[in-house]
Each structure stands twice: as structure tokens, then as C-alpha cells.
Length: 74
Image (tube, rainbow, N blue to C red):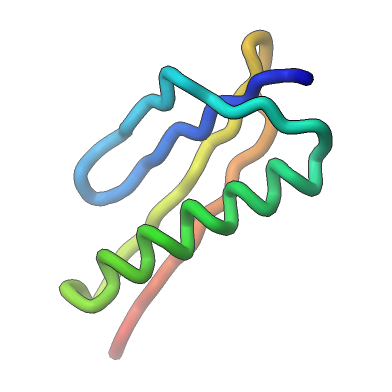
């Protein structure tokens, strides 16, 4: 199974995933991106009115996908 790395970009700066996960298909990648974004949103949103969080996914050889969550409380 291929290994994918989920690099996080939020208000604290970029965090590079050095471990990665072995996933079998794109639907598992999307599920993991969603899980990461929702976990961070749950932790960070109560303390801020605005935030943008993104997860960049890469394999060992190329960029695969980027997911972004934007939150604004006005």
C-alpha cells in the first residue's frame, strides 16, 4: 500500500508529517483529510473568530491533494 503524508498549515505555521499513513485509495485519503480538519477545527475554533486550516497531502513522489477549511464568526 502507498504511504501518504498529511502536512498541516494553520495559524501556528506549517507542520510537516514525517510518519505518514498507508492508505489504499483516494476515498481513504479524503476521509483522513476531513478527520484532521474537523479535529483541529474542534480544538481551535472556540478560541478564535477567524481561522483557515489546510492539509496538503503528498505521496513519496508527488503532491496528491489539498483540503482547506475556513471559519468566520461575524
